[in-house]
Length: 116
Image 1 (cartoon, rainbow, N blue to C red):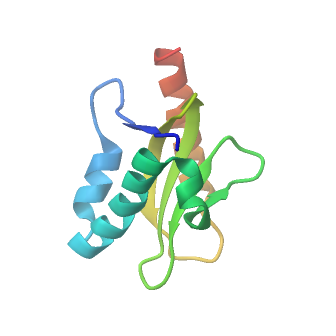
Image 2 (image 1 turned 180 degrees about the horizontal axis):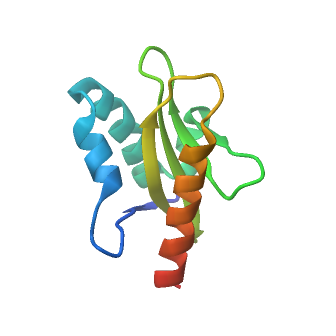
């Protein structure tokens, strides 16, 4: 069983958009997302496989909360057994909006430049 280190993205100015997103969710929505994140942390990424999907053509993965909530959180694997959660949003359409993907990608690029 491989534990996973979870890193929450923070900007160079110490803004924490992932934390802000979590704060805006209802307590039930928070619990659903945080349960999957904690499973990854304790039991490894394999344990959350039914809840994740690779975004093709990018280094991003998404944690998917399906059903009426339809919450998504983008993450990337940054080191051996470490992931960074970059961005979260409520998905309102069938297709993931490109601006959500590009925001996560720009956060990943900026984080990697500052944390080689």
